[in-house]
Image 1 (tube, one colour):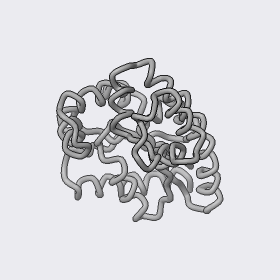
Image 2: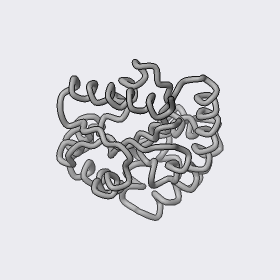
Image 3: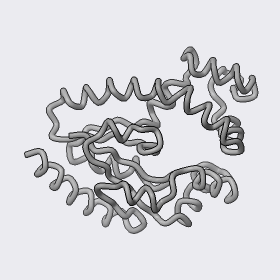
Image 4: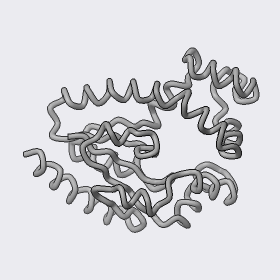
Length: 199
């Protein structure tokens, strides 16, 4: 069984995934794959540079994420173009990783993806788990983590699926607005539940 783990930016998806991994659940992170497909030498990076110019590249030829983020979060059409250039490539590699999880013999695995619903990746999973935190906390964590101002953090949060809609589409929810101990307790509960489902 594959569990699609998602949540808004800075909701703690990777931290939760690592807690599941500590209990034996293999996982693949769509963000890691998204970084892979725009590495130097990859066709997607060449397309991005062709569309947006050398300003979205660092001196060493790698993607300047901050410069690209500023462009695509300011213009919905450009964000859609970027998604059309990267999402099919990300999906192709995710399929390969999920096949390895199936072959591993683990009772369940995780597909961690911030755009699980928006990208259609939810079709690749059996259940969905939404990591939920209040929007104010998302904005605060995003501003601190990504070194952006509150306005840009708000724009990033606003560009994502609304919290209410994400929660409505969830099979399971983990509230990650509290302590790490509370998060780990909930992960243990869900781990037991998922193992029972596949038993």
